[in-house]
Length: 121
Image (tube, rainbow, N blue to C red):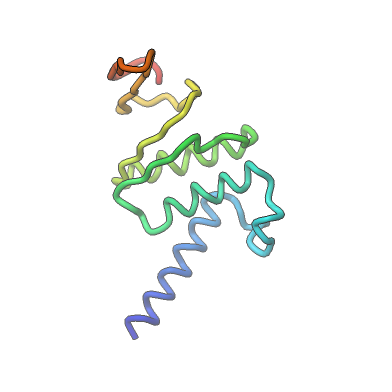
């Protein structure tokens, strides 16, 4: 019975993440047919499946159109609001405006600057 419930909960979690990431139209397609941006979206969705306590994301919105990018950022921020710690690496400064993010900027090989940005990230 426990195994059956676990499978049901997993199926429900997958349904929720597919809905949250607006991927319902792609659920019956093979991943190899996805665009690069859709594959990236799937990777982020899978990484957040099961409400992990810590997630590392490298360029999570690379190759996405603006609508997909907004959807993914909304889900990343929602996961953070639920208590998931998220570490993101990116070369972009177009992160969503947040007052509680720690930014790390590398200006040369050996110097790392930590700063809390209160106006924009």
